[in-house]
Image (cartoon, rainbow, N blue to C red; front, side, top):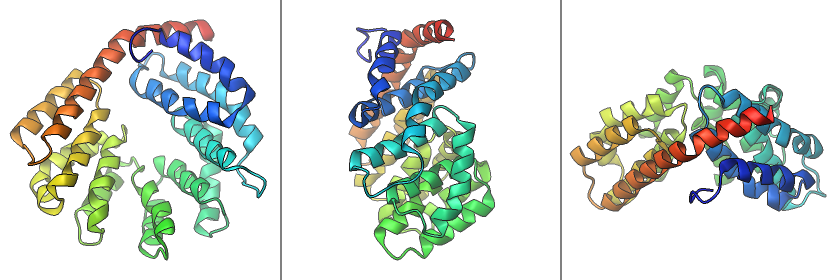
Length: 285
């Protein structure tokens, strides 16, 4: 389907069949594809229909695995639980999942969620529409973390807040002495990869590029360039291309070139498959 040899509708019809038995390996193999289709092929006219389709597909699995890990769970089941719940929230915009994550965020803060991956994903879901109070608490927990694992549990959700003020606060933090130097590039790149945060983050990054170049080594600044491959419109592509041309970073030429190639590939993917997705969703309602 990505190669243009199959219709996205053919792919989704097969997903409906294959996922029906709730096999963790099969379910996990489709998760990233469902997110990509939602991110890159939906339009304002059919986005809600796609979200509803994702909810119909994954809600039975979410009900089966629940929100609580047990000693009997395999690693595959734990991974599937985290990914299915996150996909329901982020791709399916499931109101019940978002609500439950906000409720369970307190349990994570109180360290009563034993599954570290699930704890992180609960906070990620809660952060998407989280307010300043939640942001402040998560950031304070990150500062007081007693282990690298605990630190990551609180660091990753901070990349997922979408309130413009909080996005800017995260970027300011990334360029301050409070953030570890080895975390800066990945943190900024993750915010740029967030489609809802990028309209705030990309102008900020452009405005503070000289500071970014001063703080981040050339061999890692390519991660920030690569994160812009999430852009998927001619307007964004032209803007990214012009910026990279005006601000060449030593050692990052390949990253800049690959980023533009991925954006062009995404634009072609959209032009080819978005009409097919709209037809599929219209028929499936």
